[in-house]
Image 1 (tube, rainbow, N blue to C red):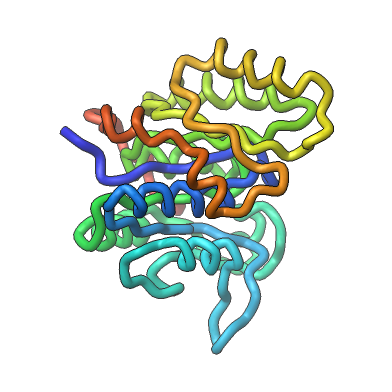
Image 2 (cartoon, rainbow, N blue to C red):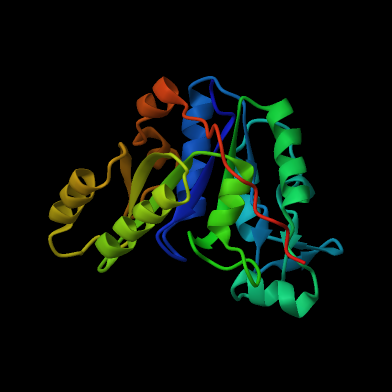
Length: 240
């Protein structure tokens, strides 16, 4: 059974999830697939035409090749540029799974694949008892990890990969986004990630790349060949 989407997470805030997600969307579209996107939870949004809009969602919208609107893409938008659980608490709006699951089902009917971008890192809180990892599990999507390559990335990447496995989700692959082009032993760090993460490296991008150039550097073969799907799992309870 093939999956209809991927959940993109990052080693931390600033790893480059939106840049890589946009490149991944373009790469899949160039392969002939209809690709939609979701940015279900976003903070740091700005008011536009009477509603809060995520800059990340705008970038994703520019990459997709199916008809979508910004309201389609983000179910929870908050103005403060803080962790989503703090922004949600301030707004008095609990983040629940059902609106996000409904949006995902809608986009799955319109597209071959849906790329869902998380917020912050894998364990970024979304409420008192749940985090981004719980959302990914509720959506039952395999995960693509964006590794922001800079000092400290090895620890962040290995811990995140370990946690993804602990949540019972397949790691479909990881993409290395070079954040510090002058990083000492950059190739050694890349080699270490390839050796220690038990999932395919789908590419090395960044360091001044455009989205178009990054799309050409992503290896889609492992995704197109396997399309893992989450067969089992218990959906976490919505935040009360």
